[in-house]
Length: 434
Image (tube, rainbow, N blue to C red):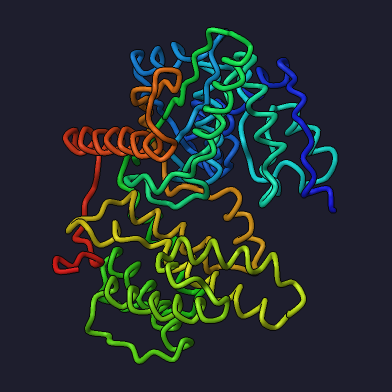
């Protein structure tokens, strides 16, 4: 087994964590005042702020709500939403620095273990827990033990980044399962312990009109993917044209005759049904596995169990990867008649992550995506869920957690809109009969 797939327990270094909190706040988020707006300094990410988050709106009541469920005799699992890569950890680190400075944070094993021994020691000293795909037992065991010491454990219940900040995706059960395990262990020793699932949500909004920068990024994507720009198209129409062209290519590859008069949403659904049918046939999926999520889960199991047939593995993996990639543009894309600059930026980042590959510039963008302009982060803490006083199932807890997170995100968006914080365009994905 390679080092990247071996779990090593974090070794938190409080002095390093405190130092990196300051570095994160200045270099990664805010930038350096006096330099971040001046040429040529504002072209240097470290002076401008790598994530370019100039302002953090984190009300006192929300900070106190989070702090109140962290500390001694409390096992706390902090569950932020996951709208953006790289910025996620920077904002998460700022959040835990104000509530539970020694909180452990889950991260992909490719980051914690995959960058060499020196970087592995650095990440473990920063209290990062490596998530090993298909083998998370050791990470969960360490998380429960750490939480029972009175320190928080942070992990993203949505799993991977979706680039859809207004929508909280389906939640994975890991945090709730670990919370119930921590509660069981505490009660077995007779301790009067509180166990909290503490949701946190944040939304980023540009502080100025960034259309020129978005148009420049859109032009890069068009050139990289060999998609001709239509001169009369607005910026959102250009993004829509990129996606419909990519969808057309997938339809042709699948042998489906495209109906170019139909909406993107309708064409995507038809293609997903056909790809799912083909995947189900290849892996002999159970008749009841008509949900795509279940089908993909069965395909991952099939790939683990059928390593001998290289060609069949290749075809099953290609079908599953295509389905997952298509699903990343969900029904939310066509749900509203208007689209914001922030949502356009998310579309572009998602396209670059999923389709633009092979160049160093694209690789860097995948790990450290650069925003189109300065932003403000709105951070809110929904009411935490106390498992010590909860009588529902894991599924019930997840549903309640999702409701609280989504309601809070929706409230943030409404407040920012009411304050004139968004620039809107007609949404070309919108289809009222979809």
